[in-house]
Length: 163
Image (tube, rainbow, N blue to C red):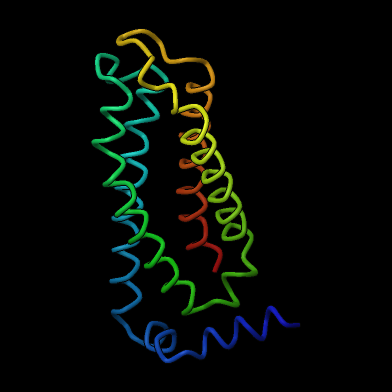
């Protein structure tokens, strides 16, 4: 199968071999990945809780987003890079792992939710009065985001127990 031969080729890369054979490289990269995910989920959670009207109701959504989203993007980039490095070390095992596959699907759904929020819903954020409740579609996006990121973290932990 083409997929499996590609995955084995990834595992055969010198960097992937170094990660899988080193007693300290995988744990270091995994630690960076966990810290980065913590910042991603924490910063997104702050915005989602504002959208839901649970926290920071006295702050405009746009102001909060401008403050936290740069941290989100930097941390997401670190999580993506570190996750890719971890994947290379056992690409075949991960690619056929149910929790890993579910995590990837949930990441895509979180991306679609985020893109639709920023391209459609967020355009009117400057009109949302403070401290009034955000519009229903913004609350739905925030709730969906919180749920998706919680499930992504759950699946990430689950992977460690099934590989």
